[in-house]
Image 1 (cartoon, helix red, strand yellow):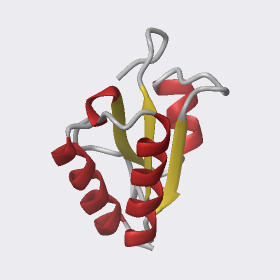
Image 2 (cartoon, rainbow, N blue to C red):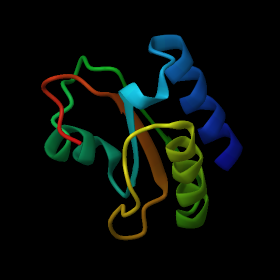
Image 3 (cartoon, helix red, strand yellow):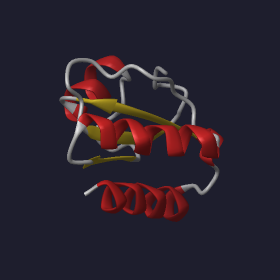
Length: 94
């Protein structure tokens, strides 16, 4: 699951933007809630999330994207196993 999450998100970023610093990556227990309520990502905005299988795997995938240049930081709430990414716009919040 971890590799599938990494590959799926990486492919999406390359397809819809390609420049990692234009994207925010994080982990969450409920990625839809986090994207909508905390990051203010529009329902039509460029976003993706994948289940990494475990909290440890989600943290590894998050670190991978942060090392590629995505914005974000460590954290993620209680027992996060989902990794998400969204293309930042003037309306989103990091």
